[in-house]
Image (tube, rainbow, N blue to C red; front, side):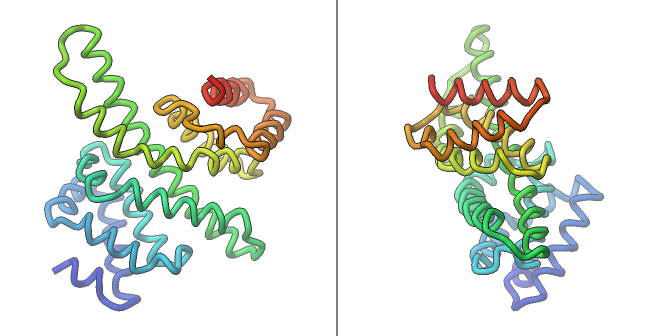
Length: 236
């Protein structure tokens, strides 16, 4: 059974995961297979087993697989949320951002950068899914065609821990890596749209310095507008 392979000693899980990554990349239909054989809990168990080696090959591969899963429109996202996706992504992002900001070894920086981008992609997909559910619920309420709001409320509650990442994302904004800036700003924008500023902590001097730095360095009008909208949402 596949779960036994994934829980086997290294490097067996990595090869199994690489196969799943290739499958889900080239055959989107295989996403449903991962659901059918109940691999989500096993994937999260693999993450727990390898949490001491966030930049290791196994962790990179399981994150790549999760990225493929959440990017696929046919994935049962609620199932992933119920299995603990939010908790794991939150923890992984906190650890990876620390490694990214502190890395001084070139290969370490490169690995942390790639993993961080994958995690930010996953976070963006999670937030986009949540925002879409909330938007559809509000539209249905407005038009009088909708049922209850429970599903949207449950989803917002499940993903509430993601607000702990707001400060972290702000710290990433001055990154010299354009991709990281773009991903972090998109995630931040979605987070503050869904949850508001959440706490005074997000307006700390350190965070304000990050905003000041990035606002000075950016010349793209769209990027500046996005940043200003984020600040406005944080202070309102």
